[in-house]
Length: 234
Image 1 (cartoon, rainbow, N blue to C red):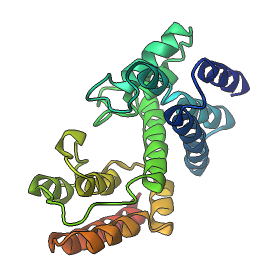
Image 2: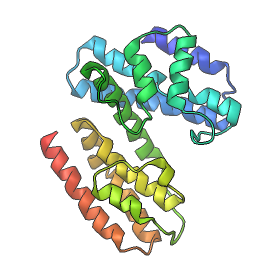
Image 3: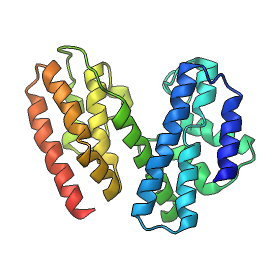
Image 4: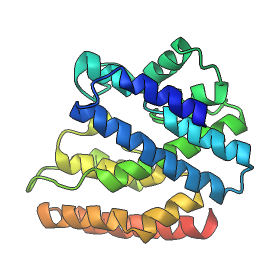
């Protein structure tokens, strides 16, 4: 891990670390590493695999830095897919661990390919869980008053599906998308952290205060029940 950490830090040093977006993604990376460590330990992985989970998390957003430098944004829809870019960057740096490469490539995709090896899937899913945890802790804290929420987002929730980013047109819908992350969470420890910190409750409370939409109350009941069920079985 120390070698990879040095490699990552040296790479980031080639960018403007005073840039707000670079600083944001650098700090995000190390929080995701911490969450990946917690999740990996909860799975009783051996020391080597715990370290590999940390490395996957360390490199997961390495493609963001070129995205910021070239486009000055963090929007894959108007620049490039930062997971694919991260894979490319690691190859250019002659880092060839296939599990780390694929975890980087697939951490931001709508879903992990079904045909991946189960061991690879595990590291991909640890990375995805850890990434979503930090997003839930740090984003979607404000919404504008009385925005219209497209019914398609509610349909995704009730079908237990992750809301696609291309459905989001305002801050309230971004919050709903954040809530839908729960349907792409894989591990008991992640559910525990989300539940104990009341992360989704806080976001739903913000929606209830700012949106004149009775559908949100029903949404809360559905999500609460889902989390309760997953905590029992996973």
